[in-house]
Image (spheres, helix red, strand yellow):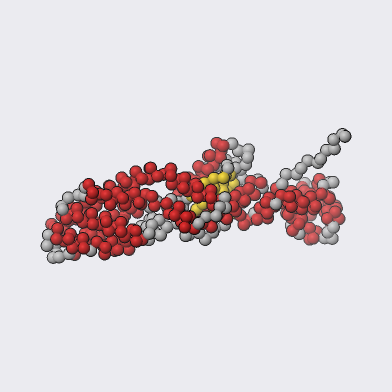
Length: 402
């Protein structure tokens, strides 16, 4: 049985060969998963390329002309789907190994010289197909890079804006940019104080992206809201630690804050995480955090106060106005509570005598209607002090002569 006859047998087995190859690459090579492609679509594309490859080997030539069309189409599809190029090349080598075994298994045993000749012909044909695939892949990636980035940016903007989105639309957009839509996602918001200039902001964004992107398992979605850089990424172990390390890298501008939202089960629900991340960022900036990661769950009270400024000011003024007559009382109360109600530690931190602390605490108790120091550890007092730190205080109104 000559090579052409063996090829005829394999051409009748195209669908079976394609199914075997799909099983060999699905879930084993990077990018070959449900996040990027449909398994049935993959089988059909593989079958076309197997047929072209077998036909060329049977004719004892490398593929040319129309033989290369399926390989080029494959490269275009994989580029659009965001499959890593190493995965694409790996799939071709899997096909080469499978076809060599199939050619050898059809008919009588091949002698050594014939097997070597077959191996060389198959390798040359496969290399030609790979070259056509990679050329098309690179061309498509170059042409579509800007378009895919715009899709990603638009997706982040819509998620952050709370716009209702059809899950099917989210999944289609995610598939186009190579993002697994059905896995948990979270958001990170990156910003600097208002005093920082645009160059510092650009430098901070670049440093954070360069540090975090290589650690991710899938594409990072990058967008923005005003001067805030907003990232949406698949939830993987070590994300907070990766951002924390990035935030302290050399060259990171002073005052940088990374707000982290909580993960959501799938990409389509990550809008809530975007809003949490931006709220955490706002709280971190207002609290004066510096080159720090601020998870949303750690600043919920601050977020509530900043999100309800009228109520926060009312609470602050109701609790603290009686103490304003003596400015030292508010600071003494703050330090006394953070010192675990310790008169000695409070005196040390304020550089005053313990008797002075005791006197001030007695005044505070009387003004706040509390009978003991322990009664000062109550939610309204703690939140009022927090609101005093977060919210600007209006200057006293001045009466104008009338």
